[in-house]
Amino acid sequence: MDKRITEQPSHYDHLEQMSVEQLTADINNENMTVPAAIGKALPAINRLIEAVERKLKNGGRLFYVGCGTGGRLATLDTIEVQNTYGTDGTQIQAVFPGGIGCLTQTRESREDDTENSWQQLLDKHVSTDDIVVGISASGTTPFVLAALRHCRAVGITTGCIVNNPDSPIATEADYPVEVITGPEFVTGSTRMKAGTSQKLIFDMISTTVQIRLGRVEGNKMVNAKLINNKLIDRAVRIFMERNPQYTDYEEAKTIVLKAGSVKKAEEQKR
Image (cartoon, rainbow, N blue to C red; front, side):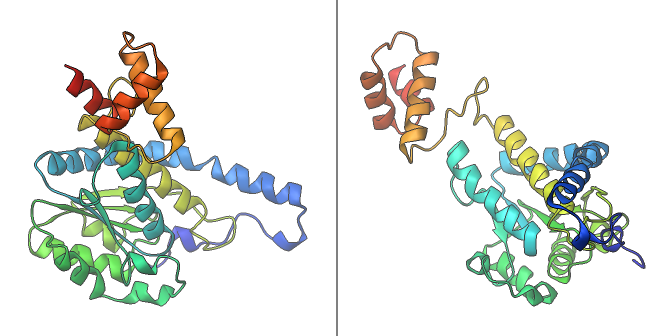
């Protein structure tokens, strides 16, 4: 790739001379272009989601492989999906340079490691039952590219989310997603629009897949974990709404807490 769009000069210059009002307005204007870019990629995103759904329905797992912003956002999604939908930590996992224990470190040189990503996948016993999705704004990150190449060599299904067209990583993906967000407000700072697009797509993938797997009913998180007062209260209110025969809040709360989730409480009451 001779010219990556994500590395092209910003459409704005002399940023240091701008007022706060100018900076925030222009950043916001750039951010508003992201949903449109995702809209153009929806067919590819849908194909990737369908592939993930098939794997998970058959007992397989989804592995995200990424560095920097993309890797951190992917890891965030793997954590949040557990509480929101009551899944365990094995169904969707993230592979980050050096392991997720390195998330808060800033040694971005690790993205050039071409062995660590595949070794982490091997340590997790990755197999053809699984799907591995690489995340890379540039579409060239060696850590990610190496993982996808290894996967394809042994018949493991691959996908990717990138922000440049015709990238090496997309070439290695069975289900490539290219979201062309254009030059960044600060030249090359792909934690901005590219990162925003990645976060929105992670939300789409995990939410859609969990709905399709039956972890949502109606529009309610009936399998959410009861880990704090806010979530307990939400679960009790959902339970009472779905089961109007229970009119006493404390009684409903006792039932839900004993069962561990709205769904389990309803199953036990049948």
